[in-house]
Amino acid sequence: MSFPTIPTITPSISINRTQVINMLLASIALEELGLAHIINAEGEKLQAVLGTLPGLSITATSISGLLSINREVRRTLQTVVKSQMLLQFKLEDILEIPLPPPVFVDAGSAWAVGVEYGTGNAQYITLESTETEKTVVLGLGATNIPVGTVHLLRQNNNLLVTFTTDFPYVMDLVHLYVGATIPPTSAPGLFPYKYPATPDGYFTTYTFTVDVSGIPGTIYVAAHAHILQQV
Image 1: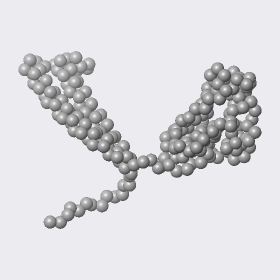
Image 2: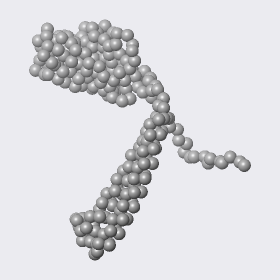
Image 3: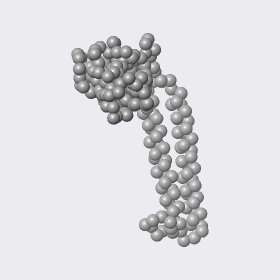
Image 4: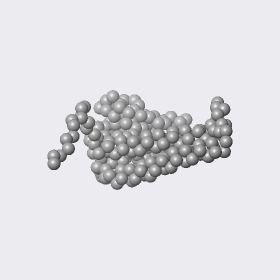
């Protein structure tokens, strides 16, 4: 007995394990959507024969007619319930598929987008004495590709500076300058605030809390992050 022959599929499809899992989960969602339409249609069928569906005047002429329609609706809903059970089994099997560990590649440096200064793509932003918060883009590279945000929030004598990246970007190192003047250096490694002090993995958000009680006027902030992209 020969083995079955699998025909060549054109065009060829190349997807990874994560994409396969996402497609399977999407297929469950689409099937659930289809079942929802069926349930709705059966409900409208009952409304129609009872004369409560707007725009239709068809009603059942006898009790036996109502019972007949009700019986057909019940059979359809029983089939829907069976489909739901199969979808539950499918979902449980998908959730047991092991995911591969994410892979990250170096994407470069990102700055809170503001006023350029110094060398490279160094930039600073300001928070005026009349402002309590501000959000700016965290821009990657010379073209300031948006990869997240930097949020400034004044709370009493403190300034909270929150770095946040959007998928598929993460950070493994952030630097921060906060002062009463333009940063004296555009080298982020010389900024007074840094996280982490030693590498301990990737993160998508981090908040510095800086005492700004000694800065009565405009606060100058330079926020830098080393970015990696998930592939």
